Image (cartoon, rainbow, N blue to C red):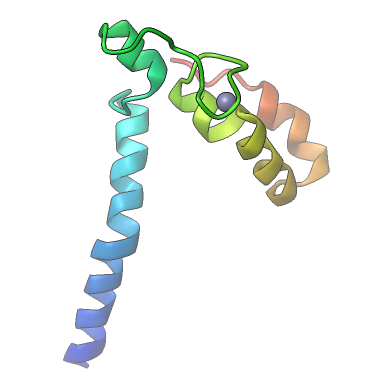
Length: 91
Ligand SMILES: [Zn+2]
């Protein structure tokens, strides 16, 4: 019993907690994207290093970048695609 609880805690700390922290950073705009680095004068370019099509914001990385978009298209139902990709999530 204790061993499985310990394993559960380990799984939480190793797998879920980092994901939660990552999402919190994204929500609080703490993710150091190229757009954020450029805003802080830490980078000359705000462009995404993955596609160079747009500024590398958290939303671009998590939803709109070419490779990410390809992944989402495999996961979300076709009927929801347009809504998913066109919803403005900027606060
Ligand atoms: Zn991109």
